[in-house]
Length: 154
Image (cartoon, rainbow, N blue to C red; front, side, top):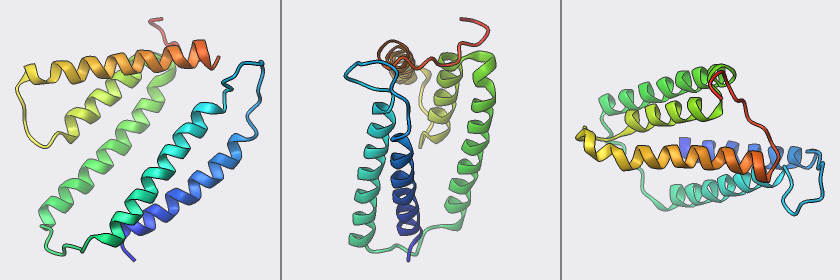
């Protein structure tokens, strides 16, 4: 069994567990979209993508000739992203959702780029990241009535 198949099975189990847990989210008002909608939507998308990953893992032939140096570099990036995620969680109360999320997503974006690019080529992706972060904040607060950490600046 490959690592992809193990990861896929674990992800599917977590999706089922967390979907079940989302049934316990209190619905405080009588709107069409409840607070459980967004977590269930994300869990459904994760489950669909996991199933696609599992199907692909069965269809492709494994390449055993991956260079050890590339593998170590990829593992190093994963650990760096875990550390950044921990810093992101710790910074939420201090900086707030919008600033912390934008910084975290930007750093991860710059970290996983396959090659170095000129600074001008980063403008559109970074503006898009900022727009997505602000849009998520507005959706959570105004549509779902879920208030996110404000931080010291807002």
